[in-house]
Image (cartoon, rainbow, N blue to C red):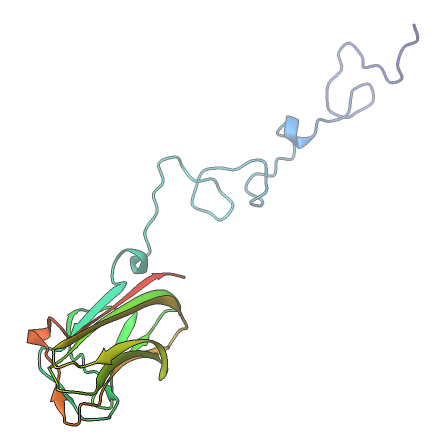
Length: 207
């Protein structure tokens, strides 16, 4: 049987010299190791560097925006005047909690709320009209003065409570307002009951 070409000597090594054999690839040796040279490297030391491996006991510092301060709640503890056939920006001057993600502003007779982070938000509002003998009433939620959701109907001589909400994507610096309208023929007041029936919640969910 014929011998193969370049048969290794009995005392051969893997140095790649005459009489030896080719050097092993990095995957089989530590020759010219690529330690920490890139995220795709085969060898890594432990540490906090961008191309190092993390220790098994490492922890993650949470982004505070994901764990705290993502929700703001405002209310109006006083009754607000709503003239006949007039869209009035709802006032929510007081807060239960605030967030750096929401900036309260003044707009018209009420308040506007600027969103300081883009993403999916849930926004919910409650308003309440005192009784009126006729006409209709509604409340509209607006983003940059454009209606995004609304609800309403006839007064029918009773106190009317309206709840509206949306879960949607909002851009950075979008401005949210609530507008109340009524056509009873006279000016009427909201029925806040100390803020129980006049409140607004804004909660950032995720990007």
